[in-house]
Length: 384
Image (cartoon, rainbow, N blue to C red):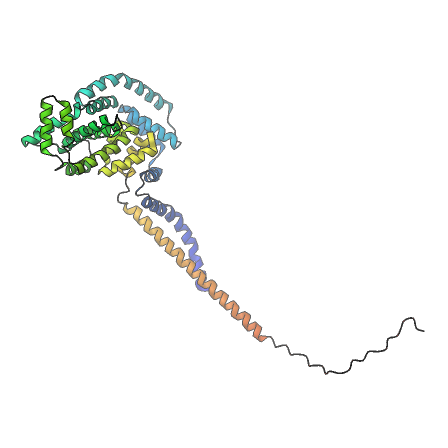
């Protein structure tokens, strides 16, 4: 009995510990479960990362940087989480969008001629030049000549340009169905040329590009380009990148194109800046499919942790272990309580049996002897 009372005294302590342990431990378990789902992972991590002050600061910073798309993404994220955006911020964003329209034509021409992709309009011009083969052929010629001369070569740009030419051929043959992959690969190439890929992604693409180029096809393509034979250059470009590497490039282009279609070139550049491998771009495509126009804001707040779980922090792991210990403590308390109830029931049953044995047995009545039954003569009540 005393043990049961002591065990029950632990209950208030367990309740107090549960208030602290359960929410944090459960959050850690949810993060572990959502490791392969970037949508659920970003939703969980946004719960502790968003605050009204953070949203307001991010909107102001995006407007100051002239990034109307990112500012608009934060406005929509604020609306989704019922956070307030001031009217002044909305007015400044509207003015920024109006000013951006006046620069579109100029940036488009610059993007087409030089491959400059600083803005969405410039990127559109660069994509057009890549689709028709001018941009990729320019980059292929520049890096290919370095490779053939034995000079330092950017193999990533070389392979992306060659793969882009091959995808351009497929795009024309499929009447434009391959355009998203073609455009996505163009952004990856532009980001690589600008040195804005993450270091790990650059290393992974460099390893993939090493040995992926067939020199005879490269020589033939460069010779056709020197003769201004664009058709022959395109045709020979399909054999420059070996098939295994070309398959990976096509997948990379499709995932990058899906991100670009929903977030624009600036959003894709955000992804490329935090991605460690091509698989991260695929996860970003899944995230953008679910988050839509708020994807850029989510990526700005969470970074790569919106895409992958990564290594859980020591604090999160300690809360998970604390949750496990808490569950074990509850199980031990329930076991002790069950034993106490079992012993209590056993004692009660023994008491009932002992009380039943103390009652004297009931003696049977003596048997009656058999004999004639005498019935008295009835007297009628009407007899006098």
